[in-house]
Length: 304
Image (cartoon, rainbow, N blue to C red; front, side, top):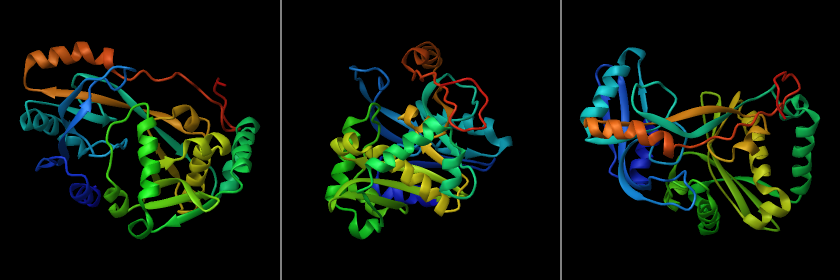
């Protein structure tokens, strides 16, 4: 976390502050103007918020703690500001809460991509094979972002961000050029049409960001090919899991990813805000799709 936060402080400054408790906890807080009605289509209410989280749109929480230090950390949340929100928490913190975008985690089968394909039920395997066939003309290459990630790549990110259903944090081109992660670029007829950024930590590949051309996606299943490329990269990196992050849940679940719920908490010293949060949060929280897919051959649960 320290390396990531150091780079984010440089390339995405947003009034970050860092808290370290001698009891055994650490968290980062930043300020940002965000849409408080993100999960309501056609509605917007942008306000400045104090956020406990990673200052970029990823599914990880912005804190860590020893088991014995949880209550001390929550108490520190109260002291550090009048009120704030805690993003993407997988933990029970005893605060007013609502659902936010879930995370999607894929446990890899076997040791090679072919093992993964063999493990799929025929319907899902055929869908991937069909996408790979439609993208047969793609040129896929790992790039050195500091030297070759350029304005054309960044415009793909901006275009994808503008189409996002739940946009939160738009990053600068400097983030992609300087953040210590790997970027795979996909080109078609010598023109970049998409890229995907990822980072590996403790045998888990974390899908961070991507950008892709909308028409190429429609004609060549570009987004699915980006995700398939990520699965192949995970095997090449010796990973056992892929953290696909948030959004596009149906596509990721049809690749075999499982949904992992995330919570949004409100913390405040003021009793009125706490009472309001308990009442409001269930009404403005994310409403997840209730889908179950039997993707792998050994699956015995009911589903599609």
